[in-house]
Amino acid sequence: MTASHLDHAPPSPWVCRFARLVPTGSAVLDVAAGSGRHAGYFLRHGHPVVAVDRDTSALTRLASTGALETVAADLESGPWPFGSRRFGGVVVANYLHRPLFPALIAAVAPGGALIYETFALGNERFGKPSNPNFLLRPGELLDAVRGRLRVVAYEDLEVSEPRPAVVQRIAAVCEP
Image (cartoon, rainbow, N blue to C red; front, side, top):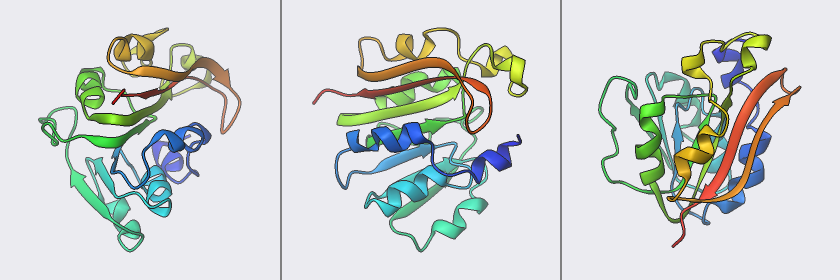
């Protein structure tokens, strides 16, 4: 399955399940937003959204959906584009760049939530991504938030939908 196919998929059930952790009406940061499947979801639920990606052209279809701010940035080679800005929700799906963990966690406002889901070791059995640089190690998301956010839910498992994969996912909140 190509990245563009993933971008056109419906919102992740994990993200939808834990979207309620994001305070009503607070801004959401959609990291590596792609075509905006999660940005669109949060816009439809009354949140202003900041969607960041290297290429934001696929997000233009959401321009009339609500309060959308797009930021074109290469998160892997450029500086963190948000400084000390904080969000009621930080959403990451199918993206991993470990050096961003501290910035992502710091971007969660008090009372806000981090909702993160991506591929984990073992996924190489099913295809891409198969490079260990793009696969979470066991417990890695737990380690990333330990002492900074309170974990509400965590999974490290093999799934069959939308395709067979090994994923790790976390929903965690920043205590006010």
